[in-house]
Length: 180
Image 1 (cartoon, helix red, strand yellow):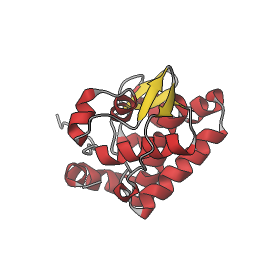
Image 2: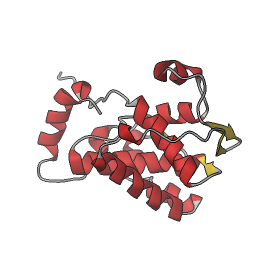
Image 3: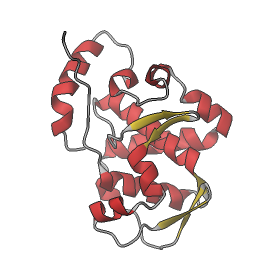
Image 4: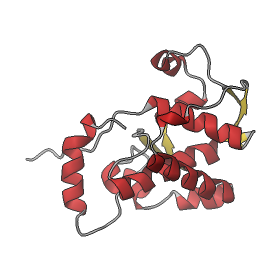
């Protein structure tokens, strides 16, 4: 029996930090659902256009759509990510389901390539124009369904194209070594 290897990326913590910080500056009082789905849209877009995601997060298929777990932990202010990033505190605070700035610092936009930031901007623009119900529906695609309330697979986030099998094979081998 052949064991199928999965596509796994090393999460880009600096990008997660910069993305949350940038989105909260753009929209004070940003709700978690909008922010989390923006990151999902960005990762999926970048994966399909550039053969790599922006963040490389671990996605959990939750009731209201995919959740990038590491980004969610950062948004909640979990200390493990403060230590990972060498910070004393995050520049935001989670109050209920909304994020608010507690610092006037600017986000480190150097963490992003032009393509990364374009995907983030597109994902954020799409997410913030939708209401909760339509955003949830937009994230309940075949990748979310295949996860069956478990973990999404990057293989399932790829669009169906003629070269999908080759792309998957390449990513299985190269993804763990990519610097996102």
